[in-house]
Each structure stands twice: as structure tokens, then as C-alpha cells.
Image (cartoon, rainbow, N blue to C red; front, side, top):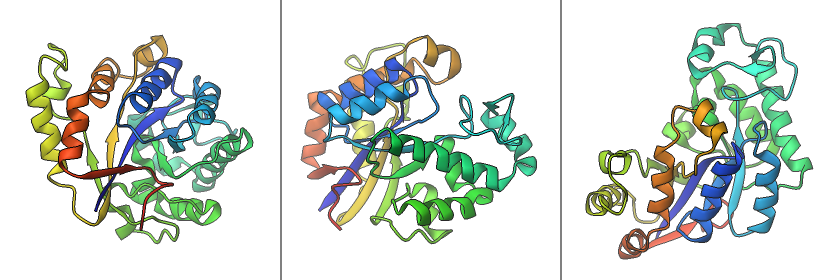
Amino acid sequence: MKQVIINADDFGYSPAVNAGIVKAYQDGILTSTTLMANMPGCLEAVELAKQNPGLGVGVHMVLTCGHAITKGKTISQNGRFYSLKEYHDQRSQIDDEEIFEEWCHQIDYLLEKGLQPTHIDSHHHLHTFPENLAITERIAQKYQLPIRNAYDLEKNVSLPYQIGATGFLDLTNYPNIRNLSHSFEELKPGCLDEIRAVLNQVEDNAITELMVHPAYVDEILYFNSSFNVARVKEVSLLCDKDVAAVFNDYQIQLCHYGTTIS
């Protein structure tokens, strides 16, 4: 059996991002997403999660986008998180305990709003960075939830509540899919070949996560993220019947972190 989780990052980033993710779930093959507690579309995303109980929704821990929930003195500047580049420059000055407290507050906030998370990951994969591994392990112990095994995280830290998802692949970051000079429909043959190349890497009797970023575009996304318009093409891809047929041809069982079979 080949079990595949198709997870969309950035749920809650903005209303347009939320709309793209829900569209990709309701009309497509998306099975999972992770929610950002500190972004403008958060509360709408929580309600959408409740309205779509079949969509697995986890927590997308944030340290490099938007504003901090806590008042840590080293994790942000005037309450706003550092960019990823600034984070690398400032990390030696950032207090580990402040990161832990901020991530806990983000998770607790979503729990208080009634979200029942299936798993945890992080924006820009910060939970996999070597300097944050001890924090990641503490989070796993405290919340007893699986954490995305990106970049062989489990080889570097003991995470006791994992589901055995060994594969981690990007489904959409390839030339035809990223080509914005033509629509998905116009480039469909090349896009399908790129998807097949990814699925050729999915192993039998394994759980594999495929990362995606479907979204529509509003001003929040457009002016705050350099990765914006390209996300629209991912919505089309994930909702396309020919793409779904390719997954069927590979005998893929689609699931999320809460429905996998060990």
C-alpha cells in the first residue's frame, strides 16, 4: 500500500489562501493542511476547518512571518517577526525559551478556538533547523502530536508520537508547473510528467507526505510573500481530473495524519 498525505502549507495566511486550500480539498485531491495562528486569515481558517471535518488540519508554527503572539524580546522587532534572512542573522541572539513559549502559545490559541490538530509543522521548516531541534522535541513531548518529518528530522531527534511517514517530497516545484507564461491546461502534458516523476519516488508500504501551497491571491499574500501568483496554478493542478487519474494509476491511497494506517 502506498499512503500519501497531500499537505498544503499556510492555511490562515489570508482569506484568498484559505479559499484556494478549501477549493483544492473540496474539488480536488488535497487531504491535509497546517494553520498559522498569527496571520489575518486564522479565525476564518478555524471555522473552515470545522466546516470541512474530512480535511486534516495541523498547526503551522511561525517564527518568520507576521506578528508574534507573545511579547518575547528577542524573537521579534516591535512585535513583528524577523524575515527568514533576518532570522539567520539574528538567531544567535534569540532566546530558545522565547521560541518555545511562542510556539506553545500558537498551538494553545488554536486549541482554545476548538481546532483538533492532526499534526505540527513550521513555516520555512524552522522546526528542522539544527539550532531548534531541542525545542521541536519539547513540543512533541508536550502536545503528543506527530511532527512533519521534513528533511529526515527523525534521524536527528527522538519524536515519540510519529506516524511513520518516511517520505517527504515537493509535488509542485518543477519547471512546467511553475511556468507562469502558460496556464496549467496548456502545459498539462509536461505537468503530468513532473507529477509522475514525483510519484515514482513514493515507496510501497510507506507513508509519504507531498508538500503543496495552493492559494488564490489577495493583497495580503501579494504584498507580503514573494511566492504568490504561482500558487494559483497549484489550485488548478490539485483539482484536475487527469491529475487525480495519475494518482489512481499509481494505486495511491490518499490520507492525512489522522487517518493513516500504520
